[in-house]
Image (cartoon, rainbow, N blue to C red; front, side, top):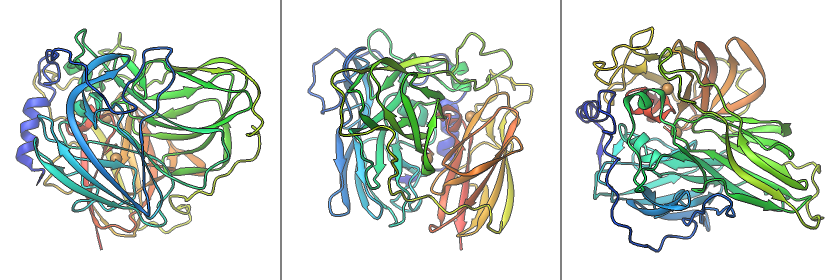
Length: 500
Ligand code: C2O
Ligand code: CU
Ligand code: CU
């Protein structure tokens, strides 16, 4: 293990930046000969029409969860076929961790990849220092590292996720299969069943390798040819009429936005990220930027329908350049079949309100200790900035690419700040801050009425958002970045340091 240095990041600029040739990400390789392999439960994902399989669950006992997490390139069944992917413990997605507020999670990460990696617990309000949620560590090939994450007793409940965060390799590793869900449990809602749905995307070559990407795809943010739910293409979800289900949905796609809808069924939103609705709210669709999660109640009525993403316009990387690519277009994610005798156990329409732990009280009445502006930048305005010769480092904030040895924002522990995040570029960027949830208060000048907590906030092309943040509990140094992970890897990331 070592801290990330400027020198390593400059190497990445050369290796993985925008100057690379087509397919030069290092991921496209000739698939190894197929050897059938026993895979962990949950990894045998079916092809279209097979019953949805959920990742194996690891649950804390006596306030403690111990996880051995092996990151390895291996043959796993993905999208109903064998594929040579990067997996955690041999399954895509990795296991689901279920814990409670106040729990401690110990993870021994074994890096058996050929590239450096590390581990991030996305959305958790835990320390960013030392062997906790430290995004600035680099765990080299062959190395093992012991992480400890201690959740405060008042940690917000909800659905979170884990994924690698070694700058320069994040998009390649996530796209190739490294992600898993985490649930911080509340008092259970009275439902027939709870499901975890990890939505991700991937592109595979005919021989089952992960396809490399073009510089254009990196600039736009790569989207996979296949959209997966728990590693499966269009799995089948079955229920009986009258049943109510709770769905924990993670958008683990590298760059794809989702606008989830389930026409014909009643969808009610319990929360997004660590934010909770005051009461379950009936919704037609739910937008999840990359990194966002949704906690949903589904009341099942008889019939067959589809869980779909309706499509989301996230703009264009460069004027006209990406036309032809259907970025974040409509897709069917799963089919839902509700048949059989009506269930009488769960009664849809009953008031359901789990005892939840909120992220924070409403910050709008608080005194604001500091205001800041942060602006997404994509190099030369008007777009190109010279695709051939931009040196891979034109993506960033405030005209600067990420530098692990530069602190961009210094904040005071426990202070409340208001950040205006501007996006003058022609595409949306999802803004993510580690450790501290953000209260979104305005989008493009329109003030939000309800308290809205997010850890990823979509900043519209040509627009701006305002968020408030309390830098509570933890001093330390961590990052904010674009959650289009290709953008993060080429420099759209900054460092925030909180100190007393
Ligand atoms: Cu989900 Cu810093 O990332
Ligand atoms: Cu994160
Ligand atoms: Cu971006």
